[in-house]
Amino acid sequence: MKVAQVGRVQRDSTCSGDHWRQRKTSGMKNIYVGNLNFSTTEAVLRSLFEKHGTVERVNIVTDRDTGQARGFAFVEMGDDAEAVKAINALNGTDLEGRTLVVTEARPKTDRPREDRPGGGGFGRKRW
Image (cartoon, rainbow, N blue to C red):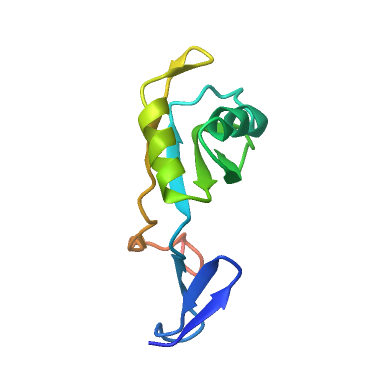
């Protein structure tokens, strides 16, 4: 297996075509933070997690159409031990009136494309 190192992400070139599978290098831990108040900011989350270790990145997930927060985020921490400490300390705690759900993030899976009959109606005779 040929693996190219790009920043802190390894790209696995065993996939066919231009599709690359990304794998995080060891040492980085991605954390899921759920049940967030819609007004929670990245700065608030960063300061909350920095009490437990080094925070590499905070990403609050927003709706692509409205731009409004969807109520969950991902926090990347630089060290596995610090991330486990943060997960254990923060899961079930209160932030801005909401009880947080803090767990290790699962890898994103490819969702199968749904076959939709009809295809949108273009090219269809109307009579």
